[in-house]
Length: 150
Image 1 (cartoon, rainbow, N blue to C red):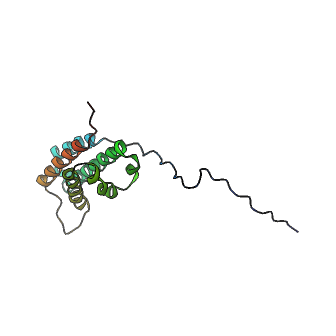
Image 2 (cartoon, rainbow, N blue to C red; image 1 turned 60 degrees about the vertical axis):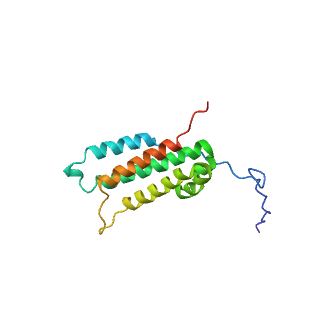
Image 3 (tube, rainbow, N blue to C red; image 1 turned 30 degrees about the vertical axis):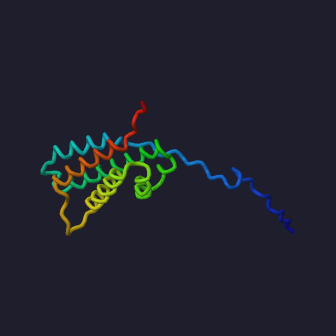
C-alpha cells in the first residue's frame, strides 16, 4: 500500500500584491537614425533589379524607425510602457508628448503599415510618398529624442 503525503505549499517568490519586475527590453539592432540612413541608401540606389521590392523595403524601415524611436522614448520616460505593443504606446503618447507629435506618429505609422502589406491589386508607394513619410519620420524622431536638461 502506498501512502500519499499531503502536498506542501510552494513558497511564493514575492509577497502577494506586488507585480513582477519587468524584464529588460531586447537589445536594439539599429537606432532610428541608422534606419533612416538605410532608407536614404535605398531611395538613392533603386535599380532595375530592385524594382517592385525597394518601395516596401523603405516603408518597412521607416515604420521600424518610428517604432524604435517610440520604444526609446518610453524607455527613457516611462520604462513600463516600453514593453507594450506600439499601438498601446501610441495611445499614451498624446498624454506625455505634444499632441502634434502624437498625431504625426499615428498618421505616419498608419500610412506606412498600409504600404508595408502587399496586395496584388494595390500599387506600391511612390517615391514621392516615401520621401514625405521619411520627412515625417525624421520630425517625429527629433521630437521624441531625449533632450539634455540645462
